[in-house]
Structure formats: C-alpha cells, structure tokens
Image (tube, rainbow, N blue to C red):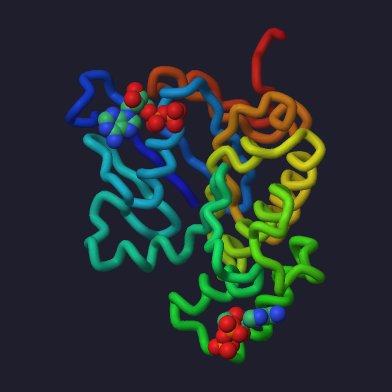
Amino acid sequence: MIRLEHVTKVYKTSPRPALEDVSVSVDKGEFVFLIGPSGSGKSTFLRLLLREDVPTKGEIHVADWDLTKLPRRRVPRLRQRIGCVFQDFRLLVNKTVAENVAFALEVIGKPRHTIRKVVPEVLQLVGLDGKAERMPNELSGGEQQRVAIARAFVNRPLLLLADEPTGNLDPDTSQDIMLLLERINRTGTTVLMATHDHSIVDSMRRRVVELQFGKVTRDDSRGVYGVGR
Ligand code: ADP
Ligand code: ADP
C-alpha cells in the first residue's frame, strides 16, 4: 500500500535533511505507528504520502500510484483515496455533525441518495448516531474526533493517515479513539498514525516505525514506544 525507497527530503531553507534515505513498506491492512521526537520527520513523511510535497531523492508508491511521476492533475484523485485525521479535528464549525460528514462526499460528487444512506451508517459506526444534528461546539473533544474519523472514513479510503489524533484528548478518551481506529483497520483500511503517546503505542503492540533526525532507527512488528525501559 505504501512503499518508500531511499527517500530523502531536503527543504530549501534548512541544510539538514528532514528525511534521509528512508525505505519503508507497508502492506494493505497494516496498522503502523510512526514515532519519533519533534522534528524527526514524521509530518514530512505524511506530507509526502499526500503529495503535498515531492522527495528530493528516492521513490514513493501509494497503492498503484508512483508519486514521483504523478501529474499534478491526478493528485486530487490520490487524495480522495486517503483519509486524514488531525490533532485539532478540523471540523467545519458552522455545519452539523451529519453535514460535516456529508460534505466530504458532496465535494467528490457523490449523489444525494448515496449521501443520505451512508452518512447515518458511518455515524453509527463511530458511535454518534444520536448526535447527527449537533454542532461541533456542542460535542466533547472525543466526539469531535469521532466526527473527524467518520468524515475521513466515509469515502472508504485505502489509507487512513492520523497525525497525533489523541494529542488533545485525555487518556480514557484516547483509548476509545484507538478502539475506533482498530475497528476501521479491521475493515481492511491501512492505518498510519504519527504519535507521541507512549501509553497508546505500548498498549496496542502494533508495528512501530521510529524516526530520529530523519532516519528510520527502528521498525518493529509488535513494538513499544521506548526500548529498554
Ligand atoms: P516532525 O513531524 O517529526 O516534528 P517534521 O517533518 O515537521 O518533523 O520536521 C523535520 C525537519 O524538517 C525539522 O528539522 C523541521 O524543522 C524541518 N522542516 C519541516 N517542514 C519544513 C519546511 N516546510 N521548510 C523547512 N524546513 C522544514
Ligand atoms: P439539503 O437540504 O441540501 O439536504 P442540508 O443542509 O439539510 O441540505 O444537508 C446537507 C447534507 O447533509 C445533505 O447531503 C444531507 O443529505 C446531509 N444530511 C443532513 N442531515 C443529515 C442526517 N441527519 N443524516 C444524514 N445526512 C444528513
């Protein structure tokens, strides 16, 4: 599903590579934590997968796309197949829960009857079936993140990218969000999650790819956050 081959990314404004000779493969259906200290290259990694930027060297493949050769006009199609979830939820504040989810389908031209059918289904999947008509500011942080996950998932993406999705949530709520991401992963969606959250990584025992100064320093199939602790 994801293949980086000897990927190096050097930003013009900074001499040190943000990523250096990174090679990582992720199979369809895997759940992978991307960890590492601030500045280690996690966001750059995610941005390259979305073709928000191109590598300085190396190749990146996502599903059947070769991102280094993908023409600009085909980038929207790639992004349609990748769901994204962020630390700060990024909901549309003047739309209801259902409208936030529906909007993700409207912008890609799904017919209204499809939207009517699938929005309630996905809200049920994330445990928000009673809250369809609420506004985001009437919801708890955990509920807002569920809306964001519903919106990211409603189009059945091949890949779900989550950038610190539990960063603004308390530990119990974070665990609930992880159960939801696991459930989405079990539907066959590949999940890649960048995180600093030690307890979540340690409790899930999934694959851990660690970056330090832009290099992969560890790739464990059933990893924990810190080694030797
Ligand atoms: P992380 O997400 O792990 O905090 P980043 O990918 O944001 O790491 O950053 C990796 C390195 O690249 C850092 O040294 C950061 O300062 C640098 N960097 C990130 N984005 C840019 C940019 N747009 N321009 C210049 N340097 C950047
Ligand atoms: P419209 O009148 O054009 O349907 P709305 O503002 O009522 O506009 O809704 C915008 C979108 O959100 C529509 O596609 C609608 O199907 C969807 N939507 C609104 N409320 C719900 C709901 N409770 N359940 C499912 N979809 C909803």
